[in-house]
Length: 290
Image (cartoon, rainbow, N blue to C red; front, side, top):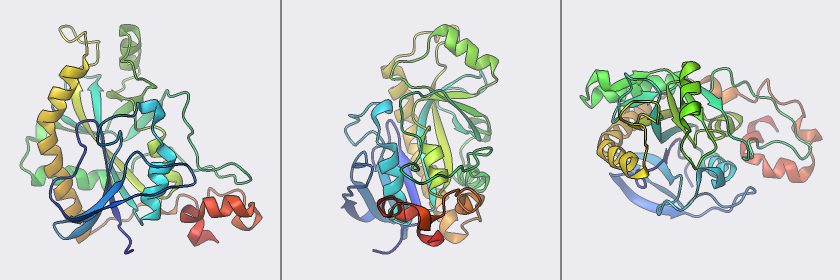
């Protein structure tokens, strides 16, 4: 199969990629289990793309139960080296209103029960996460937003995404705490997704779709799934257009990304010293270092 360089993970409300032609479903069984769903591959304006519904097309998997390692391993095995994560988020800042989009560049990981690395079992690596988002890919997303003629004020570049375990929404005290940290948005799925993408040397960026003001905002103190999904669906068409424009730009001139060499200085255990079973399990990540 020809390598597919561009991948999209769709979050709540984005269960398929409009405009994909010549589609096929790829069912993979990875060393870390099965991905959330079949990966749908196809052509988007002639460009090969891989799409995965993060929660499954029927939205049947909780954030804490998602097979993050299987999802990223599967994308890497298909050849993906640019990955866009579309994610529903709550806003922690007045200016980031519902139905706006945010391109966060930092994460605070408050998850507790999720496997967050591909390594172990005789293999050690410590990738840098100082800058967890690929700035070059995020810039292409911003340019794609402009291509679509969407209001500039409805896109916010930069900011911190707080990732909580869920599935419950925040308490008021928690929401106020996150605001005191100067965090921008809150969600449940981008960690350990971003960590794993970095270990897999995939350039990763988030297109965050604001659905609500969490519970800190007067008049919006009772977040419901119904409100969040209604706002998300309103923004879904715009998000589809931004993704399509982004893929066109990437196909024309994919930017260099520091993420593509993340393991070069991170591997502590030489691949030759790893147990054979571990090397095989990590083959998509380690192929160029063997």
